Length: 386
Image (cartoon, rainbow, N blue to C red; front, side, top):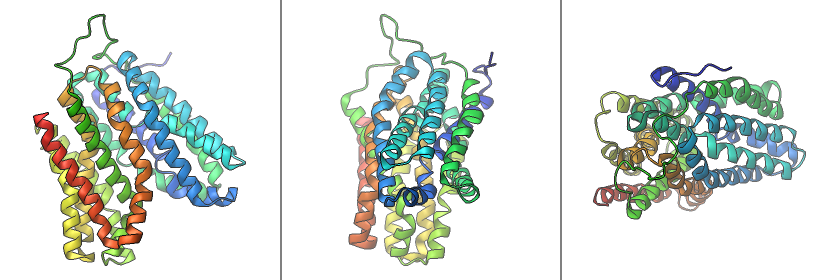
């Protein structure tokens, strides 16, 4: 019988869940950057096909997210997260044995299912089920840990690739899910604050309006689009602004530390500030960074990376804390699944759309994401009235 942590052991719960989510992010969202080219070469494909399969996985994750959230609302998140580890492992094994593009796409579809039930949204809903409205601190805590997923994932994927090959790297990640992430999720307590809905549902307050939900869904979609676009094309954008290759890469490396620093600040000095206020400031960070980059060119590459990274760090937390603060814990998981479904779909399109804009317009492509960020900021201003 596996011993489980009690809800009052908050630090251990955050550490266990944050570590398991780090594995989930590193073995799904972050492996194409390292493994897509060797995958494609081995199967006689263009890398575009591999990235297309990854985009399909994000669409699959959007489709299953609301179901996973509703399941977590009713029964707690432990079982769903444990299932995600098994699904991730199965998808990675399919990739490892893929003889053709058809099996490759099937493997990514299974991984997409794992992403829909095993990334941040599932982790946030799990914590809301355990702690109710007091989940803000734990949500920030798991993002602090999982924020290092790329820092851990890219080097580890590269090491396995160089030592054994891309197929063995996929098998390695599958094994890590089974021997590391699965036991960690098995130790989590069952949700205690959000039980299955009784005959007469009790809400934390009046049901949220469709306008409020629509505005928040738009904010999440807009900010995820910008985040994914920058993740895919930041070095090229900074070089278009006049930065050298070395400066562009060095500035890009600041994104992760800036995100973590902003989350630490939110966890400490800003923990009493309402999430809506913090989200507005964070949404404005990318448009401000864009103005700085266009105004000063290459020398502003570091400032752009720090501003964008800090804003993105807060926005990641806001995707969990803001719906909780505005709408309460009742029905949180299902609501979060629906709110993030459009964002997953736009994430799938972001690298292609922004890449085409960067090719056609050069540095002026930044006005596309700046405009989207500004629209998200104004949507957040309207949210109070909604």
